[in-house]
Image (cartoon, rainbow, N blue to C red; front, side, top):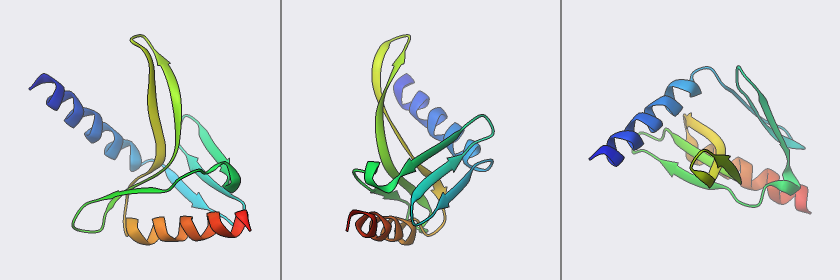
Length: 103
């Protein structure tokens, strides 16, 4: 039960953070601008586009995975657009831009 609660709290915090984040797609890169930092990635560095969405069309689009060294040791974390409207449309456009950049 504790693990499920922590997962819920973590997800809720990420959705709350998403209200203060700017997501940007250009022909050259994908950008996440948070109050505390900016994450920018050229399309050739995007190895996947993974969609996780709710029935209402709002969802998450993940596109980068990396290792984070925490107090409990290294763990994998994903970067992406969290709690976006029309997540399937965003993922489709990201896949298109990624393939154009690869051509």
